[in-house]
Image 1 (cartoon, one colour):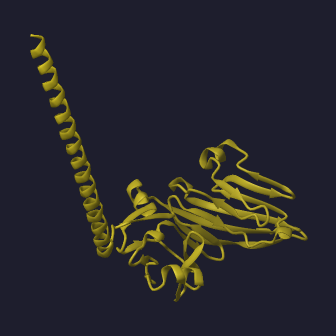
Image 2 (spheres, rainbow, N blue to C red):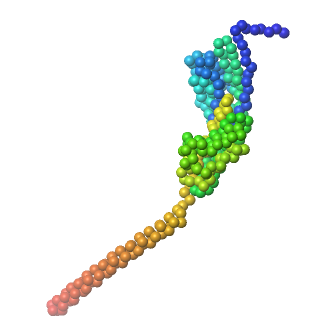
Image 3 (cartoon, rainbow, N blue to C red):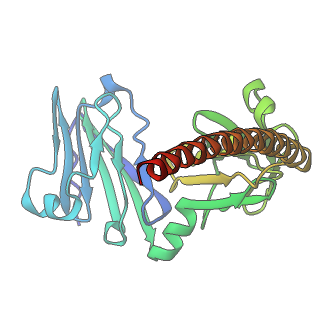
Length: 287
C-alpha cells in the first residue's frame, strides 16, 4: 500500500443529507457557500452532470441525458450555486452530489433525495378545496419526514403560522391578526392548519414552506374557495318587505291603468253605437 499526497491540496469528507419531498414539490439544495468561494462547482445527479459553475460561466443540462430527465425543471442560483428542482417527479429520486474545487482544496456535499409519489386525486385534493362560508377547513401539509428546520404557512404573502422545533407561532404580524383573528388552529404534531368560521375573504392561495440549513421545500399550493352560504335572516326579511312593497305599487298601477282603459273603451263604444244609429236612420229615410 502506498499513499500519494499532492502538495497544496486538502480533502474534506463528503457530507450527506437526506431529503424527502412529495411529487410536485419544488426543492432547493443549498450550497452554503459564498459567491467568492465557489471556484469550480459541479452538480451531479447519480453519475450525470446536471449543472456547473466555472468562473463567470454557468451551465445547466448541457447533454441530452440531462435534458431528457429534467426538461427545463432545473434552476441554478448564480450567486450561491444552489440547485433547485421544480415540479419534482418520482424519477428525480436519487443521489445529488455537489463538488467544489477552490484554491487547491475540494469539498463534496451529497443529498439523497426521495420523491414520494402522489396520485392525481390526492394532488387535486391538496391543491383545491371548497367550503361554504362559516364552515371549517383543514389544510394538510402532506407527508413530512426528517424535518429539523422550520415549517411555515402563508396566505398569499401573509405569514400565518410557523413551527420551529418545539415552538409554534400563529399570526405574529398585524396583517394576519386582522384577517384571521382567533380563527386559526395549528396541529404541532402534523403541521396541519385549520381555519374556523371561514369567510369569502379567506378564498385564495395558501403555501407551505419547509426550510432547513441544507435545503428548502415549497409544497403544493392549495387554492381555497369559500362559497357564500346565502343571505342572513334579517337580510332575507328585508328583501321580502321590499318585494311586497314593489308588488303593492305594481298592483295599484295596474288597477288604475286597467280602469282608465275600461273607461276609454266604454266611452268610445257608446260613440260608435251612436254613429251606427244615425247611419241606420239615414238609410231608412232613403228607402
